[in-house]
Every structure is written in structure tokens, then in C-alpha cells.
Amino acid sequence: MRPFYDNGSFVEIYETNHSAFSYKRSEVIKNFLENKKIKVKNCLDLACGTGLFLNNFCKTCDLTGMGLDFSEKMINFANKNVNNKNLTFLLGDMTDFSINKKFDLITCNYNSINEILDDQKLNNMFICCYNHLNNGAFFMFDFNTPRKYIEGKKYNYYKEKDFNMVAERIKEKNNLVLYNYHIYKKTHNNTYIIENTQMYEKFFEPKYIKKLLKNNGFKKIRFLDENFKRTNVKKLKRIFVVCKK
Ligand SMILES: C[S@@+](CC[C@H](N)C(=O)[O-])C[C@H]1O[C@@H](n2cnc3c(N)ncnc32)[C@H](O)[C@@H]1O
Image (cartoon, rainbow, N blue to C red):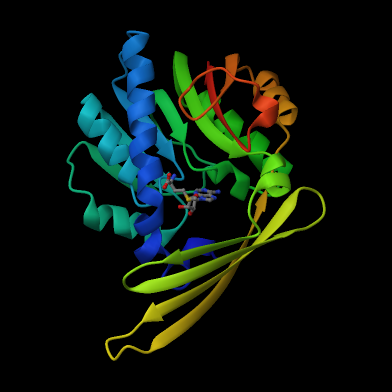
């Protein structure tokens, strides 16, 4: 199946309403490493999207980075727009990758793992991550929990200069959620082109993720809030994970 982000013009408008998240992640992760006096020389960012996180993180931390995403449009966007000789962007599936290199840090941001709908593939992703980490190196990611569809909004509206967007969320069985996106793109003569796309996400129970990480050898598994503070994770719609090989 064609990756969702290769449809329509989602990639071109992606950074309009997603960039704040990437900037914050790079700051929080950078502060975490600095506070713990951990020096990382390289980072692999899985599901790297437009490359914004990696670019910002590697600039401020002075390290080399590799981004991997299975959307050709995302990788093309990153290669065209990120101008940083220390970064490379590769087309690939994070649930089944083999790079002849090991990393001090692997990241996967913005609930990208929720786009993996098959449990076996998620398990495989964790195995691949483990195999590509140096001993004692970190794996950091975030995921949406079922609380998101208990508490989250059913509709989100985005009004921008060049487009409007409505995102509708429909809860289905087995922790699956369907998102219907309706994008109204403004044309040069002030009429609108409508694009309709849809994608699924699977929301994960925290204890399921913890068990999967443990079974694959990860240690020191911490479930944290967006500022990497310990909290009652039962209340969180999105959990940030830090663990080690
Ligand atoms: C919500 S976006 C997040 C992008 C980026 N991490 C960020 O923080 O902006 C989800 C990304 O995951 C990618 N993705 C989803 N499943 C993937 C897979 N199996 N392998 C590689 N990339 C995947 C999508 O193509 C998309 O770029």
C-alpha cells in the first residue's frame, strides 16, 4: 500500500502545523542529554518526516544524523529543504531496516509508531532499533494511548493562509482510529481545490509497549511527560519513552 504521506499535498503543508512539536522535541532531548552529561556522536531518526527535528537537533548538538522514512515525498522534501552536510535521509521502512552502522541515539517522534498497525511489525521495529544501537545507547520515542480517543477532540480545524483543513477522528474496534482529512487548498484565482485522504492509527496501552520493550532487551524504561518529567502516565494521552540498550 502507498504510504499515506505520498498522497495529495499533505507533505507540502505538513510543517505549517507540526513544526512546534519538532522544535520542542529537539530542545527537550538536548537538555536531557546535557543534564545527564551524555555525549552522543550520532543519531538515527526513524519516521523522520520532513527532517525538521533532526536538522534542529543535530545543529544544536553538533552531531551527525540519519533520517529514515518510507514516504518518498517526505524524503524528497527533507533532501530538498534541509541544508546540512552532517545529515543524510534514506527511504526505508522502520519496521524492517538494516543499516551497516550503530548509533548512540535512535529517536522516533510525533506518535509515528502509532502508524504501525501490525503488532508483529512493531515488535520487529523494536528488534531493529536494538540491533542498531551501541551498548548503553538510548532509544526515545512517543506514542498515543487510548486516552486520546476518550479525551481528545473528534474534529480539529486548521485555518492557514493557503489552505484550510478539517481532521475528523473515528474510533473503530481493536484500538484502531480512522482519520479523515479534508484539505481545502486555495488556488491562484481564490477558488478552492478539495483533497480528501484518510489514514489509520493504532493506539497502544502503556503496559503493552513496556512489555514489548522489555522482551526485546531494553532496560531502564521510563515513561515520561512531554518535558521528560516523571508523572502519573495513566493520565497521559501521549507518553514519551526513554530507554537504553
Ligand atoms: C506524524 S509523521 C511524523 C514525522 C516526524 N517524525 C515529525 O516529528 O514531524 C509520521 C511519519 O511516519 C512515517 N512512517 C509511518 N510508518 C512508517 C514506517 N513503517 N517506516 C518509515 N516511516 C514511517 C510517515 O511517512 C511520516 O513521515
